[in-house]
Image (cartoon, rainbow, N blue to C red; front, top):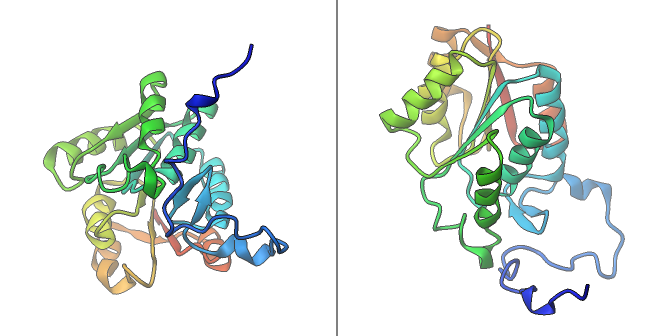
Length: 223
């Protein structure tokens, strides 16, 4: 069967803010795995490639049953976490994005929401939410699932400290929560009171791994 060439498009991936063809005439150095804001599966991702490696083994080592992503933005990391949920069938995945029309559905700026929505339709392990993570409805939904599943939350929305301070207290012993942009958009002094009050500590050795790989991620565990 001859495929229809007309289905191909140049709309996706045309945003000049994401590098294209950067290795046309030079060798790819290993250190570039640590650069934040790269192209992943054809889309923009606000992580580095090393963070994918880190997430893979953080989830596998802990055998989480419920994974929550706060802040999807373009949806590239979302695509990875969603596919992992459906492939392994070992955890239920929730993703929350308050402003999907800024990046999520905006294909010229590398948004992949059109594909994640399809994944949401075909897999009961994948759940897409377009709403405020600070709303009571979102909080109650997450809380009732945290109560029954071993949980991992990844805070990467518009206010990481507020996200951590709101959701870390509902975690059970053995649950984990991580934040992105550590030392830049969130610091220890912003969450220290919550950690002290609710028994959360930096999760080693994964914290050191995240630092060495320059992922800007900091994980915590509930004692």
